[in-house]
Length: 330
Image 1: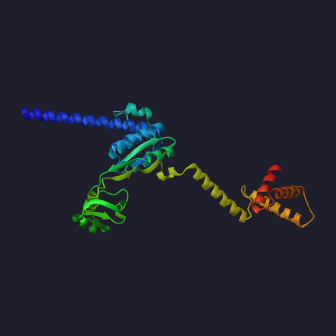
Image 2: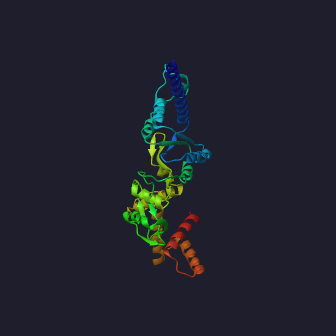
Image 3: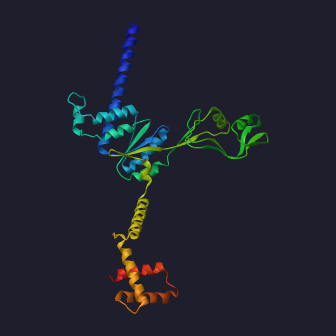
């Protein structure tokens, strides 16, 4: 009788746990579906080494931007996205809820492919560049261990250590230059112990433990930027407006130079053709007695400028003065 009661109690406990898990998963799905309906831009990041404190800091940073953070198991998120894409049927338990907000979303196929590894979602609308800039400063610290992949170069700085001279074989094994002073070991020069992306070996970890290297630093790593079905590199968000304007100006200058060289009139090159033609006509008036109204105006302006400056007028100044005169006397 006691065995039967224990079995019944265990089965009921398992049943309760399964029911609680199902409710939690459904709540996560509903939150995911709400975000997919409300937002069309998602910033994906790797949360493998993100601490709970950093997650709380992220929520505080993104809140003023109207963004939402969602982290969950990949299998759960993928199942939720597939469920969102699936057309509700009357036989479904949640038919009434899903049928109110359902619409075809084939673009989510792209998002489904990005749910690999330990990934988190930041659903956002605008001011994404500013938000990402503030999130870039978040860092998490982790104790080194054997087999851990170094997030950055681990460099040993020169100087004294608290390691006694009987432990000098650690330094010799890793090729670190040292000298013994006052019964302790001093490091003579800077040495890269572990390269970024490499695993920490047993000997390297033992040396780090001896020299009090207590942690490595992980920075928040963004993996993809999803924008309504299109996927971009998140580094694209670091391109500011000033840089875009500068690139456009460079392209305009390049196209203008090509048009001028090819003697092909365009809205950008007409000004240069006009100035060049005027330059030729003005040169003709200087070599002959022939004059026209614009040439006389320019001559008077140049004589006046030369008297004020008492210096020879350079070609760049001359062209600038011509542009001003064209604006003053259309």
